[in-house]
Amino acid sequence: MAILEKGAFAGGTTRKSGGVYWIPGNPVMRAHGLADPRDDALRYMARLAYPDLYSPEAPHLGLVPSQLALLETWVDRGPEIVERLRALGALESTFWPAWDGRPWTDYHADLPENRAPRGRGIVPRRADGSAGDGADLIAALARASEARGIATHLRHAARRLVLDDAGAVVGLEVETPARTLRLRARRGVVFCSGGFAHNPRLVREFLRGVAWGSCEVPTNEGDFVAIAGAAGARLANMKNAAWKQVVLEQVLVFPSIPNGVASIPGDSSLLVNRRGVRVVNEKLNYDQRAQVHFDWDAAESAYGNEFLFMVYDRRTAELFAGTEPVPPRGAVAPEILSAPTLAALGPALDARLAALEPRIPRFRLAPGFAEALERTVARFNGFARRGKDLDFQRGESTHEPDFHGPRREGNGLPNPMLFPLSGRGPYFAVILAAGTYGTRGGPEIDAQARVLGAFGAPIPGLYGAGNCIASPAGGGYFGGGSQLGPGIVFGAIAGEHAARGPAR
Image 1 (cartoon, rainbow, N blue to C red):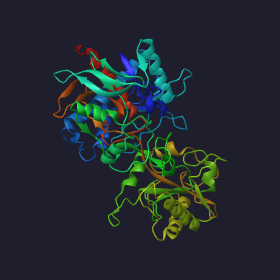
Image 2: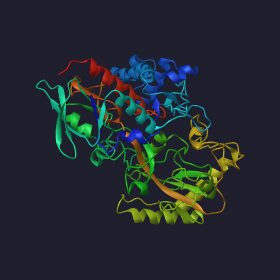
Image 3: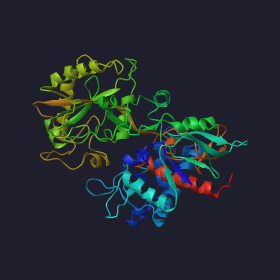
Image 4: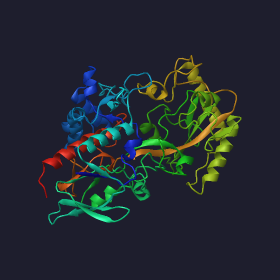
């Protein structure tokens, strides 16, 4: 057995991630007495994965049977696989903690189907008992692999499959800096090669909206889409991604970013569109919040929210310094605009958009932006004083405090996530765009992680897991770890099935 890595270091996007894997009913939950009924977990997942199909009283919950089978496999096998990794000495797990020490909540904790809103997201447990991250996850699995004599070969890029006369996968052609190799695969090839976020053609042709940048590493160019497609694989879920807002001027320089805008920081901050009005609850999770960029303006025949503007005051600049996109104290951040008044902020933003036009589609502020922004801020400030956001219910969902953090100094108002913007400048703004944590489409798999051919039969010897395949989560993002969770589960299943199969 061998592990081939296209990049110069092992672990890809997982290595730079938070290392969270979302597993319903996981052993850490059980050890802490947290119940997670199987059928409720499945209903929660089915509702979010396929909202156009979900029907709780219908057979298969309204889903296509193969779709439900993947969700059932995730739920049924996930806890067992986490426990087996622990027993093998490969990976210890613990809760992913929020700022207050409690387990993070799911991102749709208030849905009636969600009977276990905390604890499904788990992370590697470090030797000192603390919660680890993606680097710890990769390090733990790498140690376990090395201890079993499994080598990792860097700068080995898969280029095409080697098939026998019956169409079974029996090898892999690999490109290295020095030469091209043809490697025999006696029991199968498992791809966990990441998404296609850095393949401009695939992004343009398949995603449901424009993605300007991604947290995926630059080597994630969707290689498996072409490689498996040449062997007859069928594609699915290509329009979906784990969505995240990004700072436009950062991704124009380099589209692979460290982390993106996980949360909109600040109690005295808000998001507005080109008309100067709010369009979303700023404290929603990143996946939900970023999708507002795809709203189509039928009157304008354009994506009116393609770019949004985070507007904030000195209070947020100081109390939330260093929380992306607010720069650390004293840092120079050319993407941040400032103005002495709200009225002056509009012309500054419009001038910046004009300067960016060679690199972005024409997108300018609507007439009357400055006046609308002043009205929007006045309305927001009234909500803050009363503690009730009548437009977007900011601060009312269970998961929002996890992203926002503790109540900040000086905010004694009823809602800790709302505070009036100051009546005096300076004011600040930054341009945000839609991006991704990672794409979630590719070749379709079955419950044994086998890649399916064009007519639904498995391609012998070919397996997939992670972001390179059509995600079992469909269009849903259940909570932190909704990408690594199925990656770990179906990666383990792929290895099991290949090991039990015939040698070719």
